[in-house]
Image 1 (cartoon, one colour):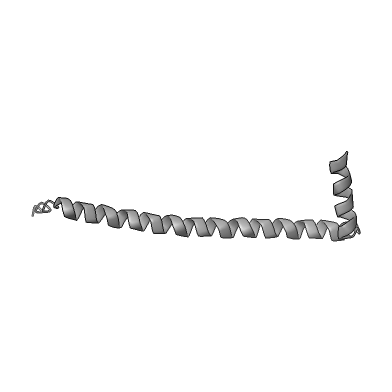
Image 2: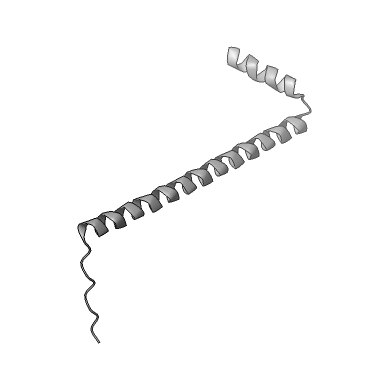
Length: 75
């Protein structure tokens, strides 16, 4: 049994539909940007944790490592 054609949308209905699609996409972008920020923060915290582990394993204090890094920058 053939399907009937969808009735053509009026210009106002088309505008409403597109406006709703834009709003949905904007909301999706906001969610993705938030997820991106969360992942970047997790990566940053993981890197800091790894750095802290390296400092602890080296037997140096935070201040000693900081001093070493500052000396390298001055050279």
